[in-house]
Image 1 (cartoon, rainbow, N blue to C red):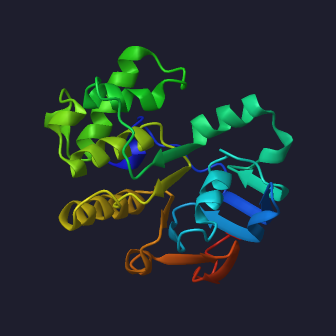
Image 2 (tube, one colour):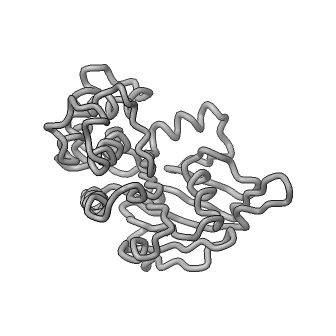
Length: 245
């Protein structure tokens, strides 16, 4: 089952631009500038790597893109919504509806089965329990874990746990999937399998940003955005397609 079919008939994108940052600055107490005027646009269907060394600002950029934090200055738009104009409650709802997260450490509930963990991705969707479980099973099937639905994390390999985490992230068909060092805790074989899965999801329509310090991994993706000292110093974005900006 494809990404676009996980929740039934897929919806056409509301806007071509999924996420847009303009002049985004983030400062912390002590005159620490994590981001210094970042401009970044991610359009529907892209697979982009955001790469940089420790302390470069890429984690802060992830938090801003994921609406987990607000910028000190500049504007952030997600799925056509100006984040700065929304209340915290509205931002939380926007995040739940439009963003999926995959982290290096999986963040699965140890006492819950794979199916239950994926169902968590629909907790705030308003979808009935039976439908949530149906969609969760479909998502697990998509990542190749149909036979592991009733297994708890301790009975799964690291690669399988990351696949559960990916299924949880995409089960609600988010506009943007943010993958933070998705292979960082995996061996090379499992890491390669996870990246192949992300490529497959992208080919089926998912918009994905992979945040990583691994330059080799970043260079394997269609677009590379390099962050250094809080600034975008390289962006290999291809020419705009159609009406995309």
